[in-house]
Image (cartoon, rainbow, N blue to C red):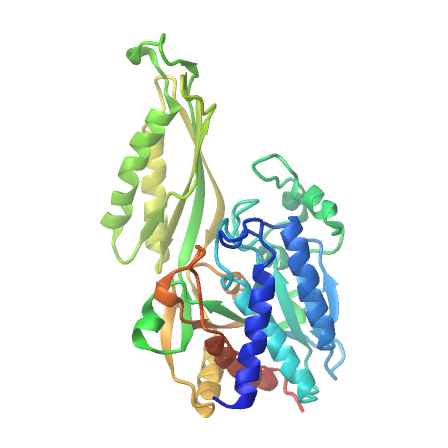
Length: 413
């Protein structure tokens, strides 16, 4: 590895380590929820680094961060590079930030080599991709593209009832700023992400060229019953919301298994109320995450899940299902994929083709602009946990590919 490449990897490592310190759970992984104090610390760091490499920094009405290097063409659309910087509770340091850091380093290379683009280059750091605080996920990219309206956003609240707009104001952000971005201002989007799976590591390959991203949906399920005393309410007169929820949940994995074709289903969140040891639960809320590479399989399982839930209505039990997020499977742009392959070949960086089983901001933006995505290996395939780790040398290789690709896309002089 050359001295220049070693220096690039070292800078990347410095960024990752710095961002990892902005967590609500020190020594227990990264917990950086949207519009939290940790969010504020991370965004201040990102904005500072953007300015250091000569970018003009702005934020929109969702709190997405943009660092822009102007091009010589007036009012030309931008080439965007970036990812998200929020996390799941007790997650890792690389999911999201690796892509933001990659963008920062591409901009740094433009500055160091005095590259003058015709089309603007913009580095972007997006909010609430994980949906850990406000639910649904992919909020930053959905907001940019108009898939989440201002009215919907202003009604959005976390589990404690805190409105998103109020949480923004608390850390000094302005929710009244423009939110939706005109698609004509975006020429293309590049995103780097950790694989979050074992394929690249098992193959011993540093770069995965993403061909397609899985389709996914999230359901929020509410089971209402009747609270009562645990000792004085006969078993045959109970409307136990948790008992009904448990019976529903027990059969959900089989629905995905029966569908096959790589379809997966996860119940990741479960809340019981009033959550007392001697009180019959009267309310249970849980999430259902369904994913597949083919839309028909997602839709089939959604219908079967809803049917199973509805079958428990009656006897004092009432169910309801909301669907806050639905994304079709998305193919990445073939021209950008070819360009990424070409640049990898010229840099002598081996790659393999891969599909993504996780959702990403790239899948949202792919309906509005040309999108390309790279994966780098995850050690032991682990992600969304404190053990999540990727090699900065692999991130540096992706930065090299993006740098050469961005020069072409911006038609740099």
